[in-house]
Image 1: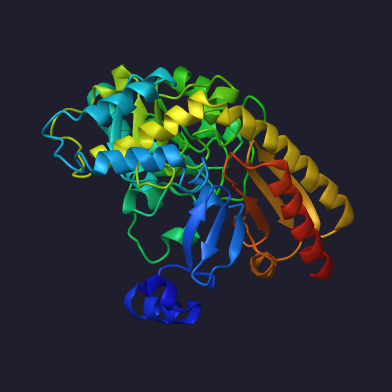
Image 2 (image 1 turned 180 degrees about the vertical axis):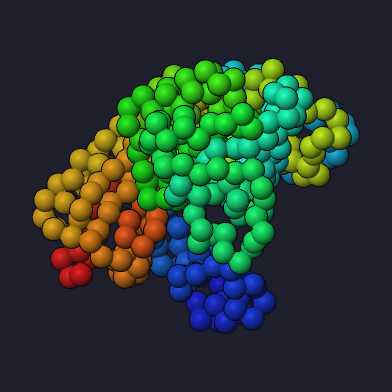
Length: 400
């Protein structure tokens, strides 16, 4: 086939000619995956500790997800949301049964889900809070790259060149309840945050921080929006990160692992908040399509019925312990932080070369900023996979 006949260099040259240059890509062409492993176009195998950036939580090409997609594709791939869609209803039911929520809106990505959450909060503020519209978000946050979500993102590097940004966003330091409460005004309709700042360096807040945010929202009668796009779906050792503190939001967003690789996004809310949207307020042509819903339903069923979340929690403890032992041998490691299987290792040097060296040794890892290695492996990772990662990092850091 054509894929196998082209070399890595051929694919890269072809891609640079036809695909917009919006990514800093590694010189790697991946064409196949199974479980914890992926293969490039020349047949080389790699152990995957980034999982499509927290997407392939069940591993690559999980057989039950593959079968669900195959069966649905042969039945009905798309129908308009002008009609009722059984797989959509079934996945919404599963999400509601396993969370705080009572209603779900489906879309196609995390940015779309967050865009929807911003619209829902403003619409609720307009209808029920006397026209309040401002949303407080966190410095160093990340919520997406649409114009609204990049404005919500508290990092200027993502906003530069896209001004003027949308009005109505206020930024405060993450993990600082005093500054957060001071920022609430008579125009505030919501507080929006990630339970863990993933893209911002894997920043873990203090214990009970989310409960403190919940209390501020309750005290001032404003909404709490949790962006669980990266940390939801079992990533932190519980199905959703808010469950660690029993601090249920009013609105929550999901994407990434919800489809185990198939594009999908979801905005979850209570009945009270969801009722602010009516027909014509918000929509998506492809959101909730039968194919994506089949993938999402299969993914959530496997995750909730086969002990995947508990296994991920156990392996997160194992991986952090091994990384801490590694830290004792390498002074360049300044901090190790994480929860479940989202883990950051901060170095006293830039990590780009470390990542490239790991690729050369057949291990894929990620980053969160210039000095933090980020690990987001599939939740099915096993001890032997952790051992290989640690051996590889040990060798690479020894030579760095």
